[in-house]
Length: 257
Image (cartoon, rainbow, N blue to C red):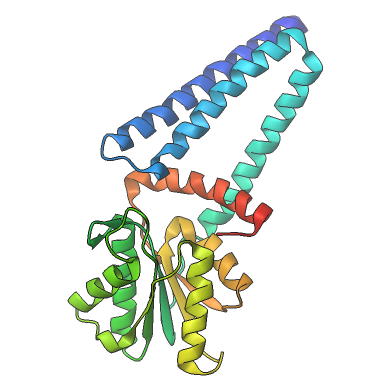
């Protein structure tokens, strides 16, 4: 088999594999969206369509401008390597446990009306177990009111914990934040004010896919905090991990959220 035929066969095989992977990613998104609209569910489709666009562009470049096609393939391989490395880090840090602390910070997430959404409920249930096992610990519920929310996330979170038996006196409401950076920034102000010093041990609760980035942000705002992982929604977990790749790139570039 000559070199040209080998190249054509390799390219054809790559195209077939790429299209199959893209189709699976897009199908996964469609199945998730059938259960309800949620922007986080769009990330597998985003990667799938991106893969299809790359295949189309690469085929055209390969026919007309082979040097540009080579650059495009090198860039694509670099992207795949970065994806594997970053996702590997996120996954390796996803399941964190800690047994004790003076204060636990529960990071806000979406609401369903006046109730915690599925991800937030898992964070609160994880925090509840921690608070029961550490009866001296305080809890900061951190989250403001979004434009489509009827109440602040902090108020909804506090009511949920109180309904499960946590004393209201143990709960501090931080109801101004709109992202993870503000969660930690505003929570730190309240915690420092309560303790009157910085000599306390804090723990933050968030879902598995969000633990690594949250830890980076906590350090940046000056909180030495340990992660406590809450489960994710299994059907959407793949999408959330893909979202973290984009979120971390954005975070490293702009140092926000």
